[in-house]
Image 1 (tube, rainbow, N blue to C red):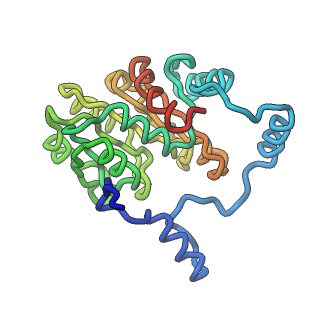
Image 2 (cartoon, rainbow, N blue to C red; image 1 turned 30 degrees about the vertical axis):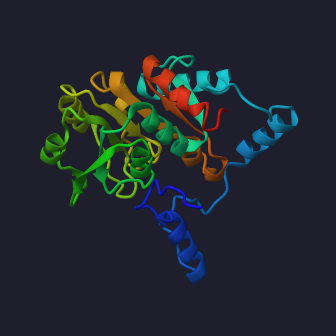
Length: 263
């Protein structure tokens, strides 16, 4: 029996291919973000303790209230950003689910989604499933900053979403506050939302503080910001992340999230 091919240009993800080849050839796997060391032992002990204490069933759809409060406190302490844990934070099954839900919540048939290339491979398929058209803008060598003129030309009344990965996977490129200023100026006259994939925010090695889109007054009202505990705690298989967005955006986000993983 026939079945519709909703992703005709998509095969097996490159991460699966590269990881399999690394195993076959005994190579160092630089193709997938898997640590070759264990999570902090204290974290494993805490998980076991709470599992044995009975915290092993469905959480509330938006995430455990105490966890959301701690997330809000963390962003306040590190970035000076005030986040409402009840109406702006949703805990998800990893960063990838948060990305998928944000795209499905904002994008529909005929909309355009702008990606900065090279980009993480889940963005485009999620947008295609929503019926969107993909526009790609290159990150330019040698520092892989956006081609600002090309990005400006790509934005139009049809643009519904711009996806920015900061720090970027796979280039390692980082946007600073000045870059966020330029981004805000470009988006200001448009109806486009910003999907800020910030899952690598803590992987900085030069002492500088990560410039989050949430702390930018011109970006915060139109921003879905996505984070991953798997990246922070070296436990990628646990698949726990979260999304921060304005209340009206969070309401739409949760409408999708509740039918993807619920808790």
